[in-house]
Structure formats: structure tokens, C-alpha cells
Length: 445
Image (tube, rainbow, N blue to C red):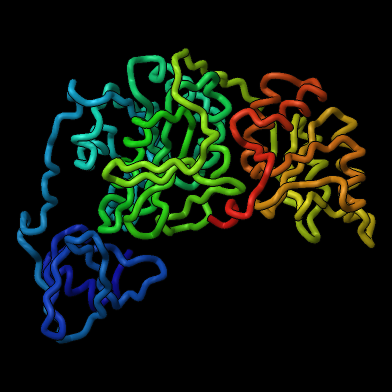
């Protein structure tokens, strides 16, 4: 991204390119760092440096500013200390790296981060792990940002996870992008049958080049979770915006609730499984968690991909349901309002979803409702709108998150198409996804 013509001219004269070290003196203060490209929405008269701390700073150009190119090695990246990833004296775990911010590097040409790190690099960058665990396997079936994930990738992760869990490890950590981390945690919760060891999914909200990088602490807390007596799929991430402790949150009761905060992942309609400190101190907040045991994990990855997640909203087009029917979808999860309503008895009958839902059910499509409120549960017996949907055969998914209902319906339809069996399975808590009794303390944790 080009700076202003005046700045470009100066940089060219000084032979300074994006990614080079630069020393800028302005108002008597000296700043040293790597020259970054101008961001698309930034002021083209502001120079951007990445400081050694990892943070970026913008410096408004003035004619009195002094700009110098630094020597080739003056701002070189410090070598990462190397340590043994395999120590026989420490408990063994395995790592599956799939990409995401936790495995990223800065691209100085574009100014953004790219998923580039290999599993070995991820671990070497986190000395917090050196005296806690040893790695049996460091695996990377693919490297992808999580917005590009699909059920195919979930199946690959599950198959590889089962293989590792059936070896002599204490547990498994999976590094993953945060955008769809909670989808993958839900998928693995259903796909890893007979789970007898802990699985921790870990991401980072800040990239490793930044001073506020959260991935190292998340990984350290995940390692301690893997040494506990739990045998649950959990997301382990910062519990506060500071480096206080992490939460381990059940994979079917967690959601990303903020775009950028380090404590973005919160439990919904549930308490966290545990509070984990980077020094190993672990406090379990729930008593009814699955315990570690002997056994063999099975990768039960059957999944019906023709399932959709559809949001109902004022003025939403009911023809969207017709589209899914015509495309031969097998299941539809609707994010309904509040207790489970959709536009039904509208003034303009063309805006009613009733005919489309009725058509979907009659053509053998499983239709399920989850609440877009996130907190609380659906109930088809309060309002007439929901009663009508229930009479048609819509499944009301209790307190399941919409994303979890979508993943679960795809997994269930991968195993059976019989309506009554599907209904029974959807309304049975298979991986802690349904909380039979919601309490006050489980709201807005």
C-alpha cells in the first residue's frame, strides 16, 4: 500500500522498503522498528512502524522528521530459544495444528498475518511448555484459516484425533483459528465416541508478533487441562482480557462472543468446566464432567452435509426455505426468535413462513429450531406461532446454541433418516449440549 508521494519519494531516496528496519526521529523522540505498509483505510501521510515490543505505531510525517535506514541486522528477529520437545520424564501429549492466528506470521508486504507456522515452530515459540509436557506427535493435516473450515476438515481432524488418543498420550491439543473454533469443538464432541482422555482446542486472538499475544498462555493452560482427570472436548482460552487465567469450556456450550478481545470465548447456558492458571493450578467449576477412563476412542464421523443454518428476522424471505427444499437439503436449523417463533401469522400472507415449513416437513426434511437469543431455551407451548410449528413436526432444540444444533443435526442425519430416531437423538444430550436445568449463575459469565 503506497504512502503519499512525498513520503514515497523520501523512502526511495533512503532506499527503505516495506519490511526494512527504519529509525525515525520526531519531536526529539527516536523510534526504531520495521516499516509496515499503509493500511487501506489509513492516512497516507502517517508512517507505520512495528516496534520490537510487537506493537505498531503511527507517526505523522512532518518536514522536520528524520528518517534513516537501519543496518541489515540492527532489527533482525531474535532467534527463538530451542528446547527439547520430547522429554521422557514428562507426560506425553500430541498436537494437531490446523492453522489460524496462533500459527501465523506477519506478512510485511501486505500488512496482515498469514498462517505459516509449522507445529514445531508453534511449540518452540512457547517456552511455557518446556517443563510441563512432552510431545509424542506434532501433526498438521492441513493449514487453513478457520473461516475456510468445512465438515470435511472436521472429519479429518476427528480421524487423526482418535488415532492419537488411542496411543500412550495423556491428552490431545488442537490449534485452530478462532472464527469457527466453536463449530469444530462441537463437531469433535459428537464425532469422538467413547472419549476417555481430554481434548483441548486452542487458538489466539492476537498474532505471535504482537506483545499481547495470548496463544502461549492458552497453550500452557491447555497443557495443564490435558493432565487433569477430565475427558471432555473443551476450548481453552483466556477468561479475562488480562493474563489472569483461562477457562476450559465444554465444546458444545461455548461461543465466540467478541471479535477481538482475548476473552472472546464464553460459556452459554453453562458454567466453565474449569478455571486454569498458567502455573498449573486448576479449579473445576462443574462436578458433572466426563472423567478420564480406560477405553478406545472411535472416530464416528458420518455427517450429512446437506444441512443449513437459517436465520429468521423481521421481513425475512420465506422463499429461502423453498430454495433449500429445491436444492434437496435433508435438514434445516432455523435461528428462531426468543422461545422459538418465526414470521407465521403476518398481515401480508406472502411473508409467512408457514407454507414453506409445512412443505419442508411434508417432503421429509428435518426442521429444527434453536433460539437466536443464545441464552435460555426454546418452548413450543407458550405462543400460538410455536404451537403451530410444533404441530407440523418442528424439533425445538431446548437450550442448544444454533451452531451446535446445526452441527448435531448434520451428525445425526449422517446416522439415521428416520424421523422419530432423529427427534429422539436431537432431544437427548449426547455431549453435554443440553442443560436440563438453567441457573442464574450460568447467565453472562
